[in-house]
Image (spheres, rainbow, N blue to C red):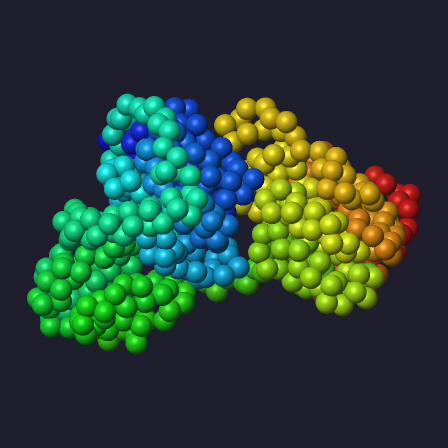
Length: 581
């Protein structure tokens, strides 16, 4: 039976069909749905880990113990997981181990644009690149077979278009899940320097064997047609080439580390003009040039952003590709926090206080956007606290005018050690933990503070107050982020105190609670536009009547705008005696 599946769904199906027993990940677009779909197969144990390094180590442990394991993350997550990844490339495993890296060309939802094919080459591990959902499923099985045959972890590299695009997938019955017995082998798995030096030689021997294997593996093949143009490509770029240049000859590579040098030379000898079409870095192009082959690549295509059918057609054939014009010009919709978001009032207050804000990754990063504009830095997951510490050590006086802001899931991901560092090294930094009871930015995944696992089982909840106390923080205050007056006074107090402090702003994400409040109403508005400074999508301004308006369909009745309005024009339905603020 065939069915439409996204690449992420297809990978999950592959996990089910090819005997994987353990799956771990930290959510991150565009990889998140892999684990969410694996969780639908109860035969596979699946979990959200606090961060990608932990997820990688869980997968490594399972594979060393004898169970096929898969770990998934977005490309920047591999940065976090790189330490165990590079070491397991030396140790190898007892059962198959696969890492799915979901890259994000074009930075649709990422803070940078990195090409993780280079990680596979750097770590000296095999790399597979599917070009559609069927291949995404099949390559899970191939990756497991390669992993076990060559005693190595294997990376499957997908991109946003593969992760989220749908194509037909043939469904098969699952293999029987077999978990091998654990075998003690300290010389293989204990990476003391002496053992590491011996395993380093094994890695080189393995790469030589893989170099022979990649010449004949079925996922590397030629499509010979018009020999005047030859194109080497892989992944989603293959689909662009096929649509833009349907008669061109193609060397389609599915196993791209190591690259099949013999197959490349054979293909190059058959065509008149050779191109490499690949997104981001000239990864394959450089290797082809090292073979002494003339090839055209990044002279035509940029080393950043996504490619397209139109770009491939224009650059190679000189003909404009087919484009579908939009039916109408849609208005620009910049990203904003949702109506009723508990973070909105916090950033409004931070802007009022004119504080320097060391920010982090999450929904609250939108606090940097107009009209709030209340965030000064965002580096990576967990960096808000550590960067804040560095800023204060560079300029001690900044402690009197600065806070670090981090979400609950991000704090558990990589903020705990930063806060420990603040206490240990005596920084007068106030850290604000925005606890909305979920991992919201990636679609409401559970985390160790929510009381539930990925598989829906009840779990202990992290106590943030107790955790911060255990780290050595003496001043910890909990606030309701909708109570703007208390939030403002608490921040002013804690920033002025010459010691580390933590403010926990606790209120659930507006999208996961059933709001029983009625939408707000506008009465006797004088048009001051103060409420617009909140940036709430439910509030707009009627230019003709010079009054604020509340969209009854969007408004959650959170009441933050009531706190902002100076003239009692915003009020809850039936509340004629609302207090002025």
